[in-house]
Length: 203
Ligand code: HEM
Image (cartoon, rainbow, N blue to C red; front, side, top):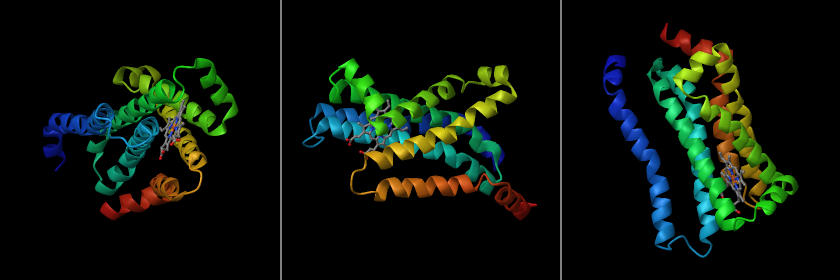
């Protein structure tokens, strides 16, 4: 099973790359065709923000999938998923600056300082930046043990993003709470007791 997966690693990576790019392509096609509804800027912000979060969740899902399947193969796809989370988050920020703030830079700073949900979103993006930069094999080698320590910051980033999501949802909290529940379940797999239980299952 592992050998077959290894054989198909490259085509699988290409397929994931193309699939991950699809929402971005559809989003901009819809924008050009003016089919995003009455508030296109809001729709673009919504789509990009939600896809950024979805890719963060998928990145966090790799460890549980690896534990359940007892296959390390999945690790090879984690970097790409994390980079797509960052890609959509950067798009989200660009959309915010271009269409919601109309490039009023002083307003961006005022928003970051004065609107708490923007502050936490901005902090999350600031955390994702060094993680994206140091995601290469080269940086992994250079940083050694500190690489894993640094990349644990993803937990703080995802917590901030969930807070950002909950904060901006004025009335209906269903969606952000569903994402929060999914993240909590994914985090439970990191508990050593659960890890041991899963490894005993296949021993
Ligand atoms: C500088 C950083 C950020 C800014 C300025 C920002 C701005 C915004 C704004 C203005 C909204 C509300 C849109 C609306 O009114 O419907 C929003 C929603 C959202 N943002 Fe961000 N955001 C930032 C960072 C992030 C990051 C890093 C993520 C995820 C990785 C993220 C994910 C989301 C999600 C999931 C929503 C809710 C989408 C929806 O259902 O409408 N944001 N953000």
